[in-house]
Image (cartoon, rainbow, N blue to C red):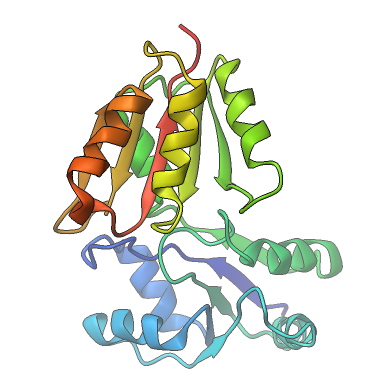
Length: 228
């Protein structure tokens, strides 16, 4: 029997956001692949999970995937988790999943529903969610300004992730190109103690963080309404 690869979401902040099914799978599989074993072990300690773990992340050596394939061929069941949220969404897990589906078609790949910063942010933003485009993390340099200009002409809601190091520069760029009638929503520290949504024009949101520099911390989801 070929093993099964489970895609298991983990909490994006609040450890209570684990499903009963996810906990059962993590306890039953033979191995858990994780970005950072120390991060995953904090979750395991909370729920008394003792399953063996190994590192799998974007800089993992290419030999890692053949090793995982060989385990599946031996009938081992494996779970893939990220440090936070749903694997393969702006996450290196997509390469492993693609390889398993292509090179080991008899293996089951089962994705569990669960925590996702993307879906959580969109559901709480109050922007049109029937049609949106997700850009993941924007490039650090090349192409950023072009993307901002493209957002101006977009009819659907635009969503992307931004780091604490670039959020202020991003808001400056958006304030330069977006008209005042376009709504920008920043979701910050989702599911954590200091969770907040900041909503307004690009200029208003930029000014908020200028007035509250102590809020320039954590993880950010940026959402921009489309053309009305």
